[in-house]
Image (cartoon, rainbow, N blue to C red; front, top):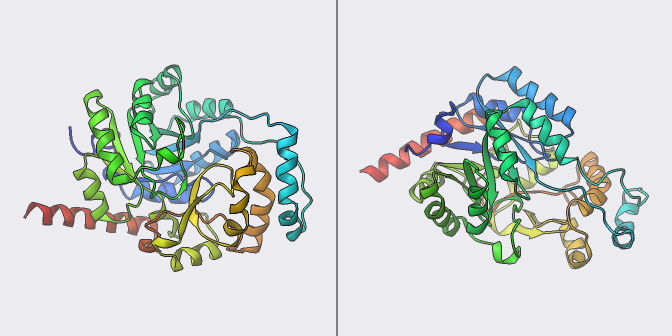
Length: 357
């Protein structure tokens, strides 16, 4: 089996998967990565079915190359009114700062069932998932639709669970990775396993079953790609590396924060969404971190924070944005996506040549 056989079998030339980055991804970014030889991904966890169709159509307008769609596996919650009221009470000063009135949102999240049916309709080459796990029947439906299935795991146990339901690959996401953690089994704290430790353990557990491992977390250049493959990964998933590309959906303040950050300035927090996620420290994180024990779980707190995040985005205020980024943020390069893919490929090949000497 070649190092990139799962991707290569579906026409992806390079072992590079662009992280989905829901909210920061764009069709232009996914298309540019795919056109350059990697696997572009649409982060559709927060897109409605109609928005999913629109984004997929735009990718297909821009490139004929394979791409993928990522969804959040989640049920629509029914939180206790008292829980919501307590959170809104604590958030009231933050709402007031932006001239907003605390209120219960019309919906907590997109309906996963409707998103899943739309995914089947769209038939991307790859369908990836995080925050939870599909059942075997859902995986089989995706296979019937022609989609390869990629699950997200932060522990070996989660990787094995994905293998059991028939996934084609598992993205082994180390604690260095930016954005939301994909933990869905057991305690989050115990699932903070680094990429270097997680990837080879997942490879050892999954290789006998023919399930590919994609490494994620702190990988920013061709050296990291080669290192991940030395550990047995078939490919790498890179999110933070593509955030600084002009095709990503982030604003000027976010871009400035990326350019100034170093590896010591990211933290894992529940304050923005109710689910642990790694981002660059800022005023919002510092202000809300002491109250983390009271925030309701994702997606409830995420929805409650929505008006504040939107107001901060409109003001382009980096102090109150969710600046998701991984520990490799200082190595991010503000290159067009196609140029970045080409540079990653050059570095990766050069590293392999040095190793071979």
